[in-house]
Image (cartoon, rainbow, N blue to C red; front, side, top):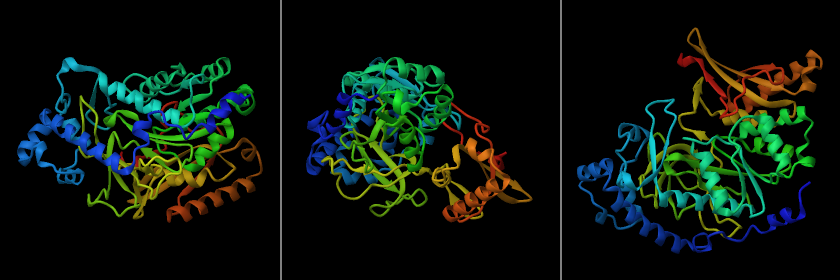
Length: 446
C-alpha cells in the first residue's frame, strides 16, 4: 500500500530544485541564454569540425549580436557526426574527458559523444531537477529498469537519482521476474522504464499473481526513450496505479533530461537554460508557424566537451502556446509524434506508427502488443496490422472476432485515410523485446 507520507509529497510539486534557474522570468532566461551561447560559440571554434566551418564561412564568435543570429548557421546533422567520427567535434583536450557514450551504429557509422566532469555534473543536476519537479524526494526508492553501458538512459537517471538522494537500484533492463521481486522487497516507489517494457511486464505480473495497485508502492513512473501515445500512458497508469511522466532526451545533447513533464502534465518543459530550440519544416528547413508541428532543432548551451549548434534531432513535435500553471517559463514541448525518418508512405499517405497505436490502445479488446508489416506485391504496397487481443476475446466465438476485426480496420481507416489489412492473433504471440519495441517491419526495403 502507498504510504501517506509519500503520497503527500505529490502536493509538494510547485517547489523548485534549482530555484535560481527554474524560476527565471522570460527576460532573465533569454539573457542567460545569450551569455551561454556566446561562450559556446567561442568553445566550438576549437573543434576541428566547427573551426573549419567557421573559417570556411568567414565567421567568428564576435560576429554574433544576439540569439536570432544563430539562424545564420547551417544545421548540424547525424551525417556530420558520423563523418567527423571519432574526435572531429571535440572542443577540449582528451585529458579533460571522463565519459564516452557511443550510438549503436545500427543504421550507419556510430557516433561518439564525450563528457567532461562538468558535463556529467550538469547532466545529473538536470535529472535531479526533473525528478524533484514530479515529487520524487529523499526516502523514495528508485528502480532503474533501463539499460546501462553505452546507452545514456540508464546512467543519466542513475546519477540524477543519487544526486537527489534517492535509494537507487541499478536493475538494468530485462530479467522481468527479478524486477518485480525487487519492487516487492525494497518497496520501490519511483521507476524509470520504456513504455513497451512497461506493457510487457503486465502479463508477467498477472501470471505471478501480483496486483501492483494493492501490493506494490509505485507512485511515479518516468517513461520515454521511444514514442508512445497518450492511450498507452493511461494503460500503464491504470495497471500500475502510479502517475506516469513523459521525458525526452537524446545522446547528442547529454541523454535524458532535455525536457520533462511537471505535475501539470501539459507538455514537457525544455530546460532552456541548457538548450535553444527551433522547430522547422523537415522538407523546406524553414521555421514553421508558432504552435505547428515540425522537426526539433537543438543547440547546447553549457556542454564543454562536445557542444553542438543547430542539431537536427529528427524528432517531430511542436512548442505549446501559453504559460504553464506550474509557474515555470521554460517552453513546453508537445508529446513526440515520432521521427521524420520513421514515417512511411502507403498509397500516397504519410503515416507514423504512433497513429496506429493511438487507435489500437483505445479499444478495450486489444492487448498490449501489435506489429505493422509493410509489403510490396506486384508493385502494390500493402499494410498489415497484426494485433494481439485479450485472452477473453480470443476464446470467444468467431463472429465476435470478425466484428472486432472490422471495427479495428474501420477505426484505422478513420485515422490514417487508408484501410490496412487487420490480423487478430492470440495473446503473447507477437515478438517481444525487453529493449525498445520493434513496431514496424518494412519488407519493401528487402
